[in-house]
Length: 138
Image 1 (spheres, rainbow, N blue to C red):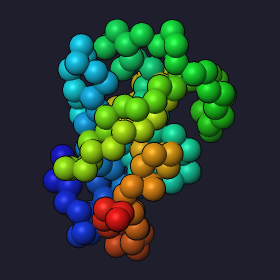
Image 2 (tube, rainbow, N blue to C red):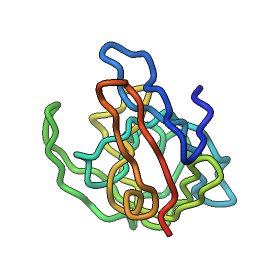
Image 3 (cartoon, rainbow, N blue to C red):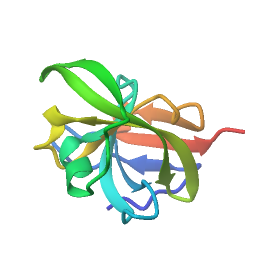
Image 4 (cartoon, rainbow, N blue to C red):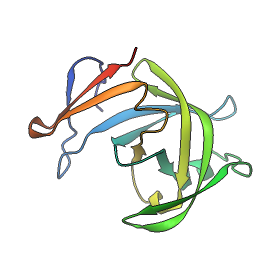
């Protein structure tokens, strides 16, 4: 696990190829335990996206969640989006949307997308050094 600190460069996780991955804590509500999940920092993803199997495993009620049409290299489908999820990145607490995607069920990670995240945390990449820099926005 990467120890996340703000205002310093973090090495990418050593995957092949190396990708920017952060451990992120999610808190849905008092009835469901918080959990950590590795998240790929994905500036191409509009919304933070988790595998649908997480919602199923936590018995989250998605009956009132918004249907979201999505298109990925892995295929097209309909995800379920809920608002105001507590997302903790180090000591920074953000409330933002999360979409559950059934096509990600076999993935051991999620995608940290732009909506509700990139306006609160500045993320810069030094791709040639496989590092990223995070800082709080004012």
